[in-house]
Length: 174
Image 1 (cartoon, rainbow, N blue to C red):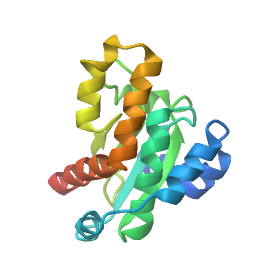
Image 2 (image 1 turned 90 degrees about the vertical axis):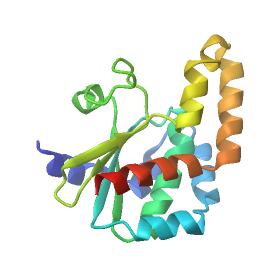
Image 3 (image 1 turned 120 degrees about the vertical axis):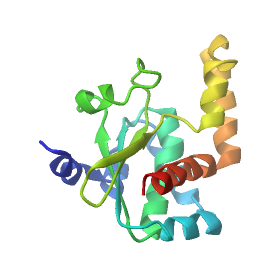
Image 4 (image 1 turned 30 degrees about the vertical axis):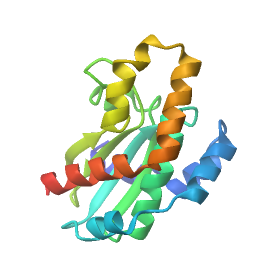
C-alpha cells in the first residue's frame, strides 16, 4: 500500500476520538479545552499548499492524549490541513522508519505529507524542551514522579510548543 492509500485508509480524528478505550475521558476533556492561539492559526493558514498530517498513536499514550487533540483542532480550523491517525502497533513498518533516537518506538509521531502524499518531514514524540528534560533529568526519576512533571508541562504549554515545532517543520519543507 502506498502512502496515499495508507493515509486515506487512516482514521479521521473524530472517529478516532470515538474509538478510544483507554483514557476516554481525558481524550475528550483535552479535545474540548483546546484553544489554538490566533498567531499560530494565522501562520497555519499562510502555509503554502495542502498538507496531510498522519499520526502514529495508541490510546494509552499519555503524550498522544495531550498533543493529538491540539493538532486535530488546528487541522479543523486551518484550511489546507488534514489530520488522520493510524495505530502504531498495526503499522510497525512506518513506526520503525521513524524511531526516536534511532531506537525507540515512542509516540506520537506525526508525518507531514505534501499534496502528493510525499513525506516532507516528521515530528515526535514530545515537544523539544520536554523531550530534552525526559532524556536527561526525567529518565532518572520514578515513572510516577516523571509523569507528574510531564502532565504539568502539558497543562501549562497547552500544545503550543508542539504546534510551533510542527509548523516550523512544514514551513521549512515547503
